Length: 243
Image (cartoon, rainbow, N blue to C red; front, side, top):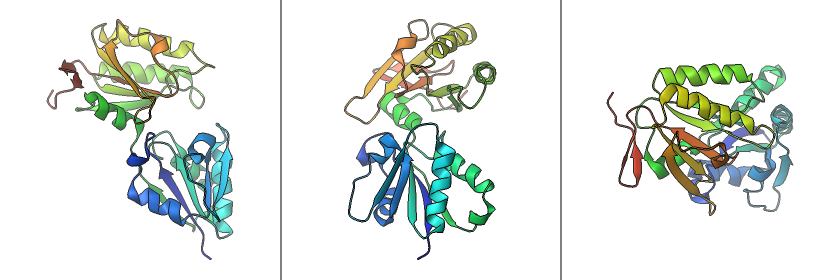
């Protein structure tokens, strides 16, 4: 039997937002590999082996998937959202780069609805013009680089989407982000906190930067910051298409 590896995005939370292509790959799989809460989203069935692992072991997870596929397994590595956005697709190719013996394997990356797009759709169209996405975790890059990118994005007047804004282990970082944004953008800029979008715990709050507090965000929150033209229309937030 010929093995393969598919890296699949499960979307932001709701089963309704999992693509048919991803559902088909899950149905064909013999093995599911991923972070514990993402593997838990895959329904168990006879013959399906689940390999759940903790956070921060992405490379080990990717190596394991490659080894399983080389032995003939049909492996799906699951990510939340889209696997190419701060997720497992990059980790898989990093592992593959160090394992030339696996580079002829059948490998596919299947897109999913990433959290920033699901959050933007709930809010209206805050990413309707040029925007960027920044991961605020400093696990894999220095904080100085995060600040430099934030300043550059603010100076260029991008709308911004922030992933991993605030965790228990680094609660102070997001307070600094808000400070920097107020300095660069002013207090009237709109900021949306979208937590657990498409799940029963979904919460969506839009305030100005002057009103924003660090406690409004956690690791289940995507934060969207408008550009200088972003505004409210009724209960919606949108960024005009022209500049």
